[in-house]
Image (cartoon, rainbow, N blue to C red):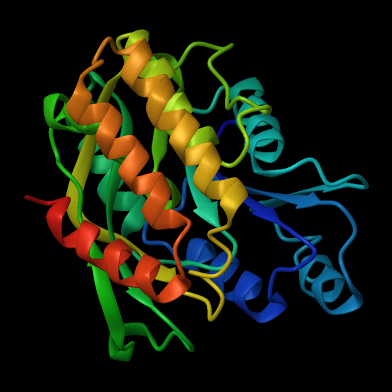
Length: 281
């Protein structure tokens, strides 16, 4: 089978079945259609989720990858990316199971990558929402924009992860076969991958366009746990050292973010939203 692109979604036991279906449908309804959608099921799921997954079992554009043992996000993405490479696909698109891809998301990224052959990793902007998704009538609560150019993206790496992970597309030919997500990096696997790819001279870019509607769940800020905060701190320190950006400013920033992340969820929510206003500056 010849296919230009692979889209990968990982599904977990605690995911909302209705949101998973919504996410899958948002990919199937894209204006660009030269893709296969790989759905990686990370461990056992309940009957409601299994019913959603099984409904796509015979869909010509979907391949299901059930896995009895939950192995985490990094393992799932690595599995799907490797599958796509074996099919000689040109691009791999990430997608989260509780988000919604705007109808022209894939088309916009394919168009950019076709016109910019040196770009190896491409992200874009996201709109935040909570509750039900209602298409153009959705009530958005925030916007995540990040720097567009490679140089700006790299300069931000010591402080933040400068790509919206659910929007990312990889060009297979630009990413070495062994440049995969680290499976032992805690909950910051994307952040560390960006650093590793920069060191391999992979070129990054972000589109200004909104590509994904990012769902803020009721427990979003509460679940940004101590483990996640510590993983992010270690990823920042890894970026600082690996990119040789060691400075008092960068060290203090990493420590300051860690301390904020350990504060009550209300404080974290305020800082989190304020930071995303600053990222585009």
